Length: 510
Image (cartoon, rainbow, N blue to C red; front, side, top):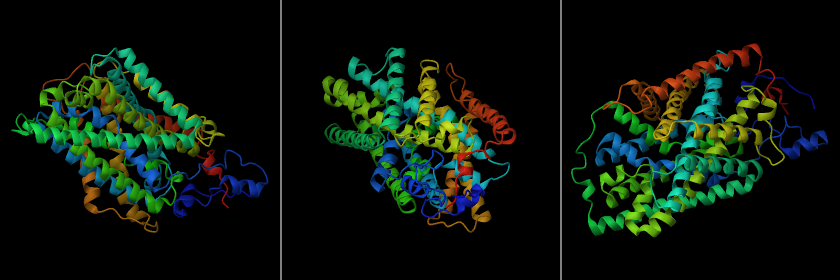
């Protein structure tokens, strides 16, 4: 079998329904060579259909956010009405972003997400944009989000054990968070098909918990009335930084609709299934989110919501059902729901590491880009898990959860905006690319405007001062890391020629 050295962009443009011509299944490789395929030839199997793909989207979106951030959002914006409005606005903006990513994913149907889009849209300097994205994603965005979700999972399990929604021992909460992260990486590393089945089952648990919240809230609202919505907008904050803080948390709760863009090589018929699974999963989740927030305020008064810390759902069920159900049984279900979110997030994060390693963006690419005998990117999973553990144990106590959301959200929105700019650039520079789906102009405009807002306003001093962590710490830390990433790009790509020695570069074209 003769190797043909062709530019990566040529391979990308020749994709047909998501399968690269250079991709070789395990069976095909064995037939051609008469032996087992080498790690360079092995590809991850396409195991995800429409429903399992939608389950991953729903499972990635529904996580700790809806069970923990309503209290933080209410505290930021100051009123029940504005809190509800922020959740609706977050849903609308997320739908616009999802539509833009549907065009990107069907136009360039291969795993990696923004890495692929930025590489094609901005080829000069060579691989700089996708390189910085990959490092920011694998070192900041993904592990910080996974750490926040893992910590909240630990909080709810502690709630079930102690009966308290807050004031847990910091070491116990973090230790449980570490255990959650390790368990998810272990399942995805050694039991791939069972992990996907467990993800789907936990997604059902999440949806059932949210439906229970909605039904309980509706029942209590009919019986008691909806007094929390009297003078719904009284006390609304007028400071822009309050809405940045609230929107970061809302978008954190909605994040995950791009999950399949990172693992599209494992999705069957991706051009057909990606738009259906991504948009369908997001719409289902958005409806449940808005109704769940309304339910919280039907059962709890605003002061109770604010005082619930990151366990508002547990306090909600305690008020509705009493101590046994609210403090012992339901928190376990919520803990399992957030565990499912960590599983889905670990799945997506490891695929970014895997693809980045195969492109030559990372040192030890021959290890991080290898598929194990369990048909999983085991080394990439180990790295994702290790970084998540670092984020769990290092932030200072007290404000750690909010800081994790903010530091992960800043580069996320920066690259969301750059990806949409890249989409518009490619409409002019890559007219020959097939576009099975074309995003509406208004969707692109809304996503860009929101990205600019989310990247500029965090530098505005918030009303009423700040806590122990300065208000500018998260965006400055994220920008500093990206600046350091540029220097690392020069070493890895320019000096060491990492791209020329990557596995994707050396793949044979059949």
